[in-house]
Amino acid sequence: MSATLFSQIIDRSIPADIIYEDEYCLAFNDIAPQAPLHCLLIPKKPIPKLADICAEDQALLGHLLHTAPKIAAQQGHGEHFRVVINNGERAGQSVFHLHLHILGGRALMWPPG
Ligand code: AMP
Image (tube, rainbow, N blue to C red):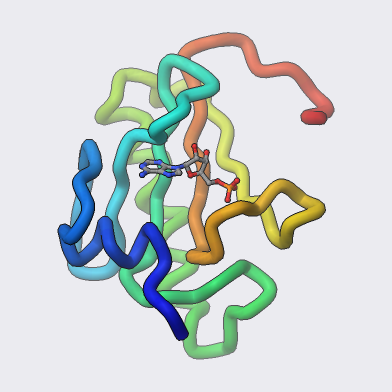
């Protein structure tokens, strides 16, 4: 599997505005933010998309969901935020390394486009 942009952010071969890191995951601000808070939370394990997870990834996915509200709170938006995962090109996925968008800091409409 070729290295995605996000793998290169994990290994620091390209820069990013990293706001959180632990043993399993990394969060950085989105380069084209759609809200005052718009960061991406990614596992260090290179899973291309949500549909590719396997049983052994359950704890990792739980860790990501446990970490997302902590990051929103750390960024000052702990009460109102949205977590989005795009799976596949027609759902809006453009980088094939699993990532959670964490958005907040403005009213968020529903449904998304
Ligand atoms: P998606 O369309 O769900 O795959 O989301 C990919 C996201 O990655 C988009 O919101 C992009 O703005 C963001 N993105 C692309 N390149 C970078 C980068 N170098 N640093 C931070 N965010 C990026």
